[in-house]
Length: 301
Image 1 (cartoon, rainbow, N blue to C red):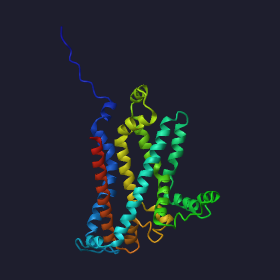
Image 2 (image 1 turned 90 degrees about the vertical axis):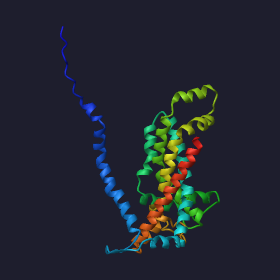
Image 3 (image 1 turned 45 degrees about the vertical axis):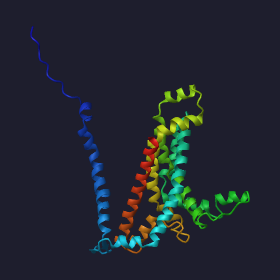
Image 4 (image 1 turned 180 degrees about the vertical axis):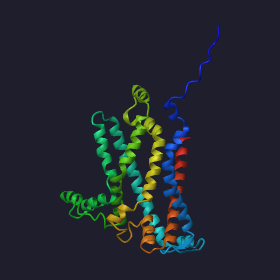
């Protein structure tokens, strides 16, 4: 009896597509765009920070002079303080609103897609349009002050009062505009929590708060960390809302780092100094992200 040797079967189309090389091919266009429009300009900005770059395109190398000037610039530290204060208001509020709406959507059975779309709608709205709408809402004759006057508490100067009120008002606008993205990320994290764990906790007599504190939050911690880091970066990059609603005022009460960068680069045409501000902004955000990562790792141990 002779055994017939069968030819090896050729890989199917699906098997060929699952090859890692195909993944690289699909990612390559986006990678090329990232290198051209993100990585190369970032390196260019770092190099520009060591020059006296002029509008004509001419420049001269001046070493660390821009950084020495930045350290002695009181306006830089004031704008850094404003940005930090804004981030302290914006990030926790965004996390609370996003986690709250994600938790509610997680338990919605009917119309979940409709509610998800409605809550995500502000995220795809332009900051300029959102700013104009909220200027009217915050106006002395606007919606909020109209409601406050009916209960004897208004009117309040939301955009022209003290610093805390101005930044708080801007933070509310940014939260309304941006929480939809974090909501979807947290909702995806909630869906990945095993249902049998929740059912076991319910059988053991755990209440809603105990399940949220003992099960949901520990399992959701990596997602929460991602949201906190992303929203911190968003907070430090705030510009559109300030530009449209306050212009950095009143009395520079909302004059953030990116607004200072904009003024130095496109108002005074001091591109080298503006690039230095951008590099320092990157270092500050990187340092804060590393601290957040360290705190998360320590809490996990």
